[in-house]
Image (cartoon, rainbow, N blue to C red; front, side, top):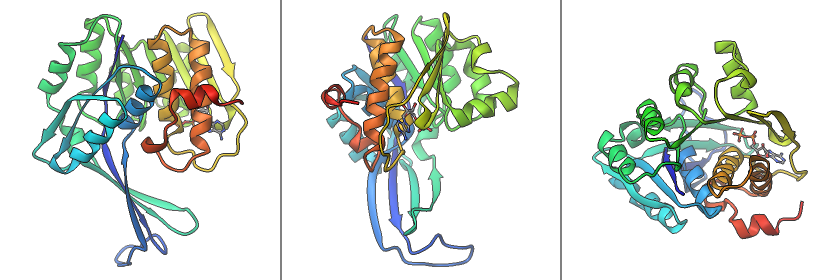
Length: 288
Ligand code: ADP
């Protein structure tokens, strides 16, 4: 089968700064690096590294052709990424010597994915394929309802959290994944717990505490693999990409979660995001 991922593509521009600037202050940076980022791109790379057939649906500006090229190099089908007359989304990340950060997120092309791009992609999708959405693009609800109508399996990673957006796509979902903070936000905003959502499979990731799965047969807890983390950025996206790739290959949920936990544990031992997501051979060789 295949995974169709309507998702964000960001240029993560990381500036080293002596301190986070105060209002009105001008400071010089001491370093600059640029990486491929965005939750959508991270998930596409993770699923492709996990050996799934992944089609990314999204948009960049002319300044983002390198990002499309990078996705292609990681094995992602990029034919459904529109190149628009606007800027590629950017995350401007300032990091001080203590590791404290401040982030500016400019949505750019992520918020302007054309409906025709989605429709052209969906014209190729087959019953039983996965359609994945997160909360960093436009067209989420349109995609979710179309996916349900086409009998695709619809998955939503509820990040960054927005109660209205979750509620808007909830009726169409087969799979929902959120972290512990997002699960709390959902509880506060709607009074609903992961166990009483009308979604076949819900996973709540718990960082170093592992993950909970709420399926039709009930609740199951999976402890995390014990490692010494150096950078937890991208752990959730890696986990999501790997779980979906496993399910897409026909794995039972517990096995897909086991594989995703190994991938995410490897990920937290590395600095960086999309560019350092482990591939399947590394995950299989990883002895926990
Ligand atoms: P997010 O990045 O979305 O906040 P989490 O922090 O819950 O997601 O992490 C996702 C998954 O990554 C966890 O379910 C776990 O498998 C793995 N993980 C995260 N942090 C650690 C850690 N410190 N040690 C081992 N595994 C971790």
